[in-house]
Image (cartoon, rainbow, N blue to C red; front, side, top):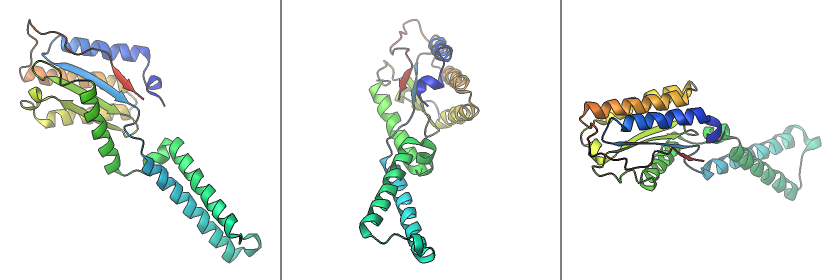
Length: 217
């Protein structure tokens, strides 16, 4: 599923409006970033290839032992069958995302998501605010992971547990297929946290980062 299929035009406008409303109250910038997948995960393709190739070879051995009438004895043919099974396993893993997800460890998913989020923070220049008060709400759908990353001007005041609560609530809404609602609630809660900690908009505040949503397949 592509990001365009996950969001309707109405959903995107609602999220943009929530960002504008939030930034009208706070001295900070909120940037939602959505990606379909944070990594290529070629290791999963290799694992899929190895599993199916091993399964094919095991079948050849079983047939040789118990059904000799249809066994394969030609070494070249055995090689071709095992290699073809391996290629099929790699193709299945590459194109069927639930299989790819199943073949990845939580460590690999976490590592890729964190790295992609950190790159997005830099690429979108969320650090480029006068008082270092940018917040990124990063959602990676394939990994089912959310990261809320605040710049140093906010981190030195707001405890990490506040962002953790927002992450948990957003993941809960995504699992309920309430993606847009969950993101809007996350934006609203970020606003509340900033206001509670004194990040109120002042007369000389300007919009320092563009309000477009960042969607990256």
